[in-house]
Image 1 (cartoon, rainbow, N blue to C red):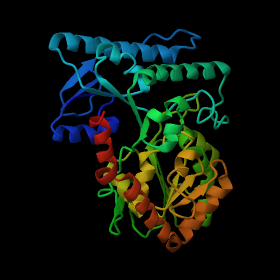
Image 2: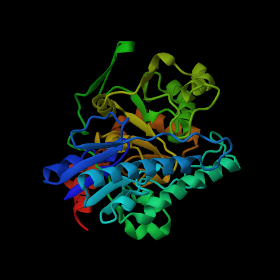
Image 3: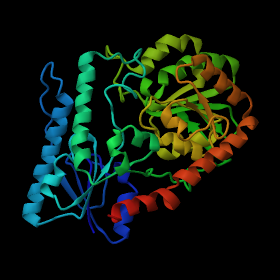
Image 4: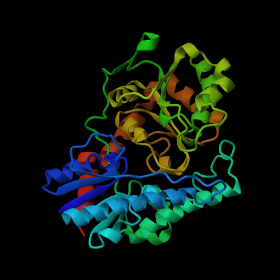
Length: 404
């Protein structure tokens, strides 16, 4: 089969799938943004995208960007078809950014598989979950609604849809549910696994943390309210006071993230340290920025308690990998987390906004690691049985692509 992946940041969600399809003898190519500098060995077709100039007060800025990018992809696809006669049997794209909006206009005979990651509704779900951090004006709500309109353009022409989680599939309008397969991208549980000999070196503090040490971890791509950074930080003073030997390791960048920064040129890290920093022992609080994946896995192996919070949106791979490493995850009682963690069975759940409850749960986990041993074992079992890449997710995704 001739299979074409369309994604501005390829390989992204297709990092395992694309090479697996090549191994099965398929002709696999990639159509991506010319600025995508991620390494890839597959034949690459690039398109040029010029960001539309924003119009002051426009409610359609997001829609304009989707249309412009979709048109750029379509124009490049048309030149490839005309010059080379190339026609894919299957196109696998993402519903975001508008890339797949017009692709069937160029290749109507191709089957369009679309990665339906999440339906960013203008109200409900994550947009108005935490108005204290992200107050929304009516214009912002209306502007966000145009993003879902752009998604609908791709959803309406896609032949097959796939979402990584049941929760994410349910975020879409019900009319699309029968066409959505639920297949997770997959966790390499042979790599993300427990190790009693794991250790992590924090060179700037001349400190090595090892399994058995009292370590509390918090990990996300960016430190922002969308992932509960503000709640975690506000819970820390009580934790560090009650556990005077605990070290807290925080992984993540300081850029805006899903909801943007707090304004006035500040970061959420600065804002929260200004708020609670005087009540913290900063010698035991370690901001390590973004770290290589092997170091992240070792952190999960040495972690005595791992806090993970999220608005009702996309679940981070990091939580699943933490569970695969045998970490005791204390998660927010929000829908994406509840799909994986059952309180008292394979982890702990705490109401997202309940700062005292977060402090209490983290203190309890740090104080009595033996009590969490069974939760750790069942956490890994959950990921191995439900989300393993090699035995479950990748075979399912291959069938999704190969079968009509």
